[in-house]
Image (cartoon, rainbow, N blue to C red; front, side, top):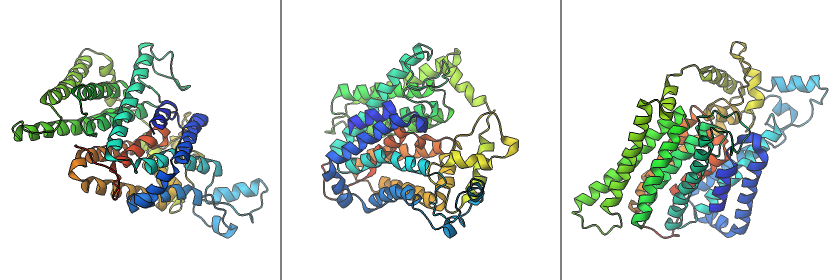
Length: 438
């Protein structure tokens, strides 16, 4: 599982344009399932029924969209007029069967992209509490490795060590992604995972986690991602609450608690947060890189509202069945308003929510609502020893949801795998596994 996460972070941040790298992650996931097929079966029998159903339905949706339909049915589906016209112009037989998806290759790719997160959930849900805590901490440390690469790239003004063929700005931290918003999302999620995992059992480990979290927060600022910096505020709010409640509980107990969480650790965590805040404030006041990041909030020149308007129109055109998972880039161009067309191609709606509705219609919308409802319920029903970990995982899901309103984090293989780690932390088991002291 750790190797799969490393591969996902190292190779999965380029999107659909880097299919072979994504394929390496997906093949590793299949290998993981093959080696631990018994755990996959245990997932089906022991995991909460709701999460099993959600995983299976999520995998089934793109496959069902590939099932050939009789001509009378597929031609009657909403938004199929251009496809019928294309068939006629190309001299193709309109009496042939065709699937719901308007691009079979894209939809098959969408299904394959779900293999890695599905494998992480299926295997990780069978972990004991200690193993889940180790997985959360390892994911945070792996993100720190990506941050170190990003710092090296930034020191060379992004002239070398970039993993993807992008037009990189010299003052933006990309790390293992082609998109700085996704980079910031990774750092924010990793910070939350380091904070929500049960406290490290040694003073050195706790201090390392505090310093690592501070570095991740700084890295999120250096991406110059506006959505990432907003999400950072959410994550730091969780960290502050986590540390503050721990200090309050220890003081209330009169220092007689047997938990391995010394006051020195809480002080170190607070100092790390304050040092990062002071460094960012000083950089902002002195015109450094943090100043460049904050100045982006004043840049309101964006074409996203126009893309959202056209995307909402496209969603209505294909409602309620959708155009097929992964087909946004193929169908959006048909519905883009002439007054909004520019030399740049809108390959994404810059809203995962709108894209999911366009591609999957009411079915994908219900799946999203089902996942969110299950995550919320899992947070509230978490046992006392796991409450902070579950709350942190829920906070991570919230940050992904918030960024999905403005961007497309879940179109990244890396962030799909990180989202799966959050699900693993929320997925309880019936009668298996051991517990840890939170």
